[in-house]
Length: 322
Image (cartoon, rainbow, N blue to C red):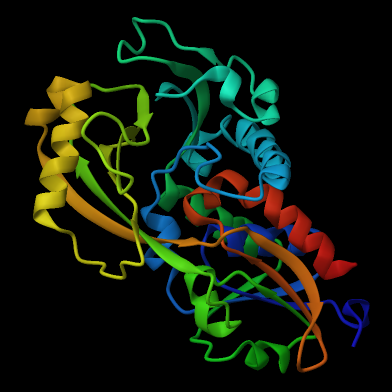
């Protein structure tokens, strides 16, 4: 059945990638349902930091375009932060050479090498970037999708063919679950642990992937969000546990406090763990499904799902309606 034979589309997956893709399809005039196993607040997306930055994601030749399309959307949404959850916030990406960034960097207004006052630990870049309060943003996406005529159904999917039996076009935005649903053994979890503290007055973000005394599984970052400061983090490959590790949490606070000493005395108000759905390359692709319908894949975004969400959603939606 051709995708044009019906306006019905089922998007499987209710995280930021699934909801953004569903919204793009609904805006294009399709009748869209989102099937999600977990309520939006229970998805991995709800745990994210979430700073716009192309982080641990390939293929490089496509990521820049996806990221920049998302950046333009976020810049517009930042005009209504209380509704959309998006704010433009200044900060430093540490241990990063400006001339070592991809070609996309030239399209980011104001991105430049950091000064010694902004970061005294070595080379870094300064930028004013979208910082997304994910619970608010996911709620906004859901509201916009419903207002566009979409439906959200909470249901567990054991086989993508279940969606194929209900609509001629299925868009697979299942993240880590694509490992079994496709199946795709190249999808692997990258565990991230966060600590939430009362903000002691930090109004800029900071990130450092690795650093002195750190391993590939650790990083240092803090993001000021309304009502809290998010501290991170970890990047543990092939670890499925969603239980916070107290020792890891202590180490996260200590690393962040080494950058901003006032964090050391901040009261801890919560812990979060999420499993980033990594893959050697993001998969945005259309194929003829085994059941005869159209199947579009949009998964494998790792730790940059928010960063590329709008770009990948626009491409996936185009594939679904072509």
